[in-house]
Image 1 (cartoon, rainbow, N blue to C red):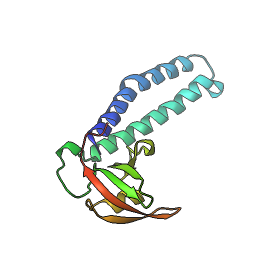
Image 2: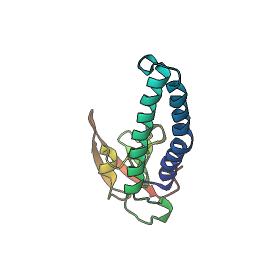
Image 3: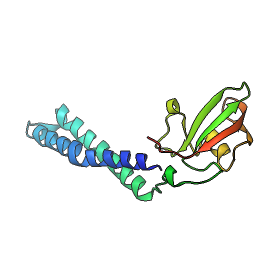
Length: 154
């Protein structure tokens, strides 16, 4: 994962621990004092929300513990690796830019594709001048690699 993704997930975990979980716990305590819990919507929703928060916290904790942070600024390779920003040209001569990122960072509107996606898997290990065939779920297409660079991913 990139440093910006690690920070984003760490910030989310901190917000859940310091803000959302305490607020939800207070809401549950207040709702519990309002009588019958079986028909108390605030209590029922609060308990459900607390379970969701705890589930997300477990996920984030494991994801952050298991992550390997790769800073693209530390990369120096002619070959496409994780965190590379790659300029390609399709069969019609149109250029596209893709950045190879982790599964928590995918954003198609920015051209950020997972290293596990058909495009990401095919580009990994290739170099400028290589032509690749991408087999996606709906079609197959050719791309020529024009440029490979490693820059900060925000």
